[in-house]
Length: 266
Image (cartoon, rainbow, N blue to C red; front, side, top):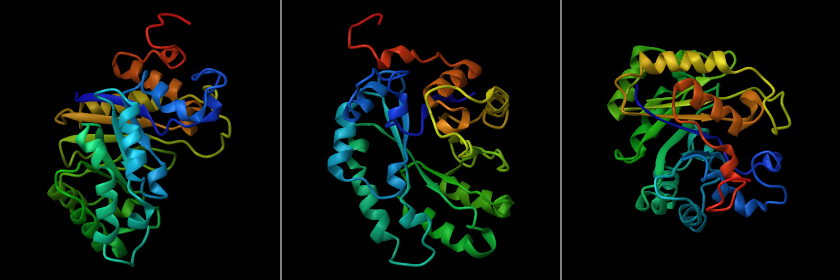
């Protein structure tokens, strides 16, 4: 099985105060506390706008050595079938990530496409986007329509060594391909849950299925990055802890987010 990292899709959730962060924790303190528990996080805000270099430098400064950020590619790239040349949007996004790359804290970037993005009309666009990113940047692609589950898609991803995201989501069943040397999995729930302060759904069977896929289809991969969101079970940190348990990964100590450095117990 590959080396597995588990994290959450974001860290800035007020509902986590009192159950993960201490009551009264200011939002500016969330990331530093989150990074005491997990060594991986997915940045969702970059989907809406590319982060500023100042913000990225701050992320790097607030987190310990070995911590990794996986960032979503801006939707101006993934959701615009026509528009300015890709270099005009990909270049600034990649450049903004330089502080993380220099600090050794940049994980994969994730190009997430809408369900309306389909192979019969968008195959050329996907190829252009894959080619627009530097070859030494780890790239994962989340495709949400079954028209992509054909050998030609796999061959395209293999040429770029891009990962196909193994998305766990109701009604979505992507193939368990390993086009490159790493895997990227996302446990994503529907939007029915609106509070995120505790586990509210059963998720273990899907996690056990993921363990089987990692042991079989994913056995040759070097690394696996697995992310969970609040909507999957109702509470991201608790979901990530359970996933670690199911996969046999040393479990996170969730209480570390509420402790001060050097404090052994709460």
